[in-house]
Structures are given as C-alpha cells and as structure tokens.
Length: 432
Image 1 (cartoon, rainbow, N blue to C red):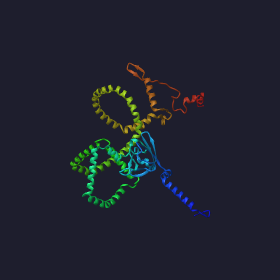
Image 2 (tube, rainbow, N blue to C red; image 1 turned 120 degrees about the horizontal axis):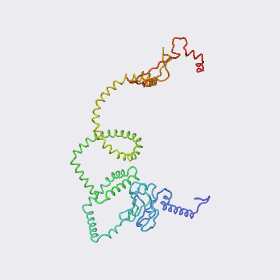
Image 3 (tube, rainbow, N blue to C red; image 1 turned 30 degrees about the horizontal axis):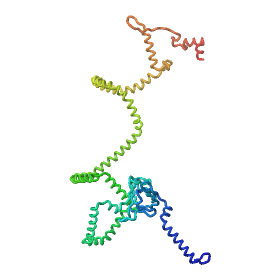
Image 4 (cartoon, rainbow, N blue to C red; image 1 turned 180 degrees about the vertical axis):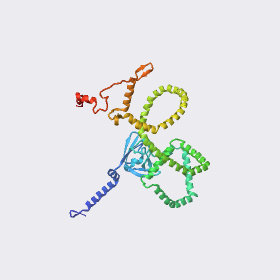
C-alpha cells in the first residue's frame, strides 16, 4: 500500500487496520441505535412494577413471537419503571385500543427476557401508553418454591423421581419411537403452521391470536357463565336431536320460504321507495300536525256536547230521510227528463233571445232599441202595473189614454212632424 507514491510503513498499516476494526466493532455494537435513529418508528411507553431483566438495546420487543421493535430507555418512576419502546410505525394500529404487556423469559429456566405486547380492547388506534394495571412480570421457579409448603415440595420431589423411573423404564422405547416418527410428522405440520400464518404473516396470525384471546376474555369474564352456556347448549342439542324430523321438514321447506320471502321483500322495497317519495311532501305537514292537534283539543272539547246531542237529531231525522228516498228517486227521473233537449233549448235560443236587444225588421224596421229584451219586458210589466192601479167596485182595471199628434196621419209624402221640423229648424239644430 502506497501513500503519495511512498510505501506505508508496517506500523501505520497496523494502526489503520486496528482503527478500522475498532470502528467496525463500534458500528456493529451500535447497529440497533443507528437503525432506530435512521428509520421511522412509533413510540410506546410501558409502565412496569419493576425492572425485571430489561436492558436497553438488548431486550427485544415482540408481538405474538414476532420482533416488532427494541427498548431504547428504562427510567424510574414512583412505584416502578417506565420502559420506552421504539417499534414499527404500524404497531399502534395492531395493538388496538387497550393492549397489555408482560415480561417473559426466553427459556423455561429464565435468564434472558423479552417484552411481549398483547393486543386487547376494542378495535381502534392505540394512544401509546400502557398503564401498570395491564402489565405483568414473570414469576421464577424459586419464587414458586418459596411459597410451597414443605409437604408439597416433598411430593414434588417424589413426582420427579417417579418421572425419572418412567423415562428409564419400558416407556423409553415408546419415547424413542415417538422421536423417530416425529420428523415425518413435523414436516406436514410445518406446512400447516405456514398456512396458519396467513397471506400476511406479519399481521394475520397475531390478529387471530389476539382475537382468540379477546374471545376467551369475554367468555371467562363472569364466573360460571361459560359453564352455564355449555349446559344450555347441551340441552339445546338434546332438544334438536329429539325434534330432528321437524327440523328436517323445516329445512326442506326453507328454500321455498326464502324464495317467497325474497319476492315479498322485493315488493316491500318497491313500496318503501314509493313511501319515501310520498313521505317527503308529508313531512312539513307532520311537523305542523302536533300544533294542529294542540289547537284542536279545545274545539273537540266544545264540540263534544253537540256531538252527543247529534245522535238524537239523527234518530229524529231518520223517518224524514226514509220519506225522501222515493222523492229522490222521482226527482232523478225528472232531472233525467230535463237533461238534454230542454237544457239545450234554455241555454240556446231562449237565453240568446232574452239577453239580446230588440231591433224591428220589415214594417217594424225603425222600432226597437239597444236595451236587452228582458229589461224591455220588465219595463212593460212595470208600466202595466202602474196602469192597473186604477180600481173600482169590480177590482183593479187597466186604464188607456187616447191622444193624437202630428205624426198620427199616415200615407203622406212627408209627415207633419218633419214639416214642422224643417219650418222651425229644430231638427237641423239637433243634427248639428
């Protein structure tokens, strides 16, 4: 190796290799810190009763056995510690609204531990803080043995010695056969377990396990409820077994019933659509109906005595209505006779004659006026009434007056009235 055209001395080369090794070791040792600092993460705070074997950047965080993050800090608080977890960005959505946490050993004998996050609660976004009430720490074997009574410990030792005899006796061959057949059995089981992980191994199986845990929590929430449910289910099964023929007939007729129900629901859907279209205009009226009813109550209260007396009136009017029935029948025949030509004649020539003015023709060409005929007839009747005011011993009489004027003479080439008009100039002044 050369530097600026000169060979590097063995001392410098060794120093460079040592420095590179140290830097690589530091990078490898701090790879978790570097990856967390450079990657997007979500922060989860877990409150524990005690720090039970948790080390930052060494203790793993898992969900359903799958690593989802690392612990970056452990700090003390009143009554316990707070563990800070930096995990995958989509972890809060997987944990649901009320998850829990527990410190679990990696082996039966303990020593190494990991933080297990368990989804829980209703579906919803997790707010990032797990309280101490939903966290647990492991119970080691020595703690269990300290709580056991001396006779219990003696019995446990006897059981272990008996198990040693079982494993070293005739059962040894059976266990060896089991271990010999295990590979052939475990290979198909591997496919089954692989399929159980679902199409999205990172979320399907954890969600399934979390759902089963929630189901078990609901089933065991109340003491004795699950046992009662199973007992009732047994009774239900017995009843279904006894009535199997009836159930079979019901199931046989179910397709036809479903077809009829489908047809009825389709028709009901059409009716509901029409009802919705009809109900839109009715809604304003319905809103005012309550106020209308409030105003109607006093009127009904005042009308109640009238309605009560109306029953007596209807009873008295019944004979009159029964007598009017023949009259109505005959009136119907009369109206049928009037309908047609009679009404057409009244609406036609008679109406036109009465409402039109009279203008004479022929010998009566200069007679008439623009006054309608019915008014002239009324004037004539009024005049005759005035003439009939003269009475004598025999009753009312009509008086006539006889008179003569210049126009009384007929057959002349010019009437006396016209002659007087030309002589006096009265007619000419009026024309002007």
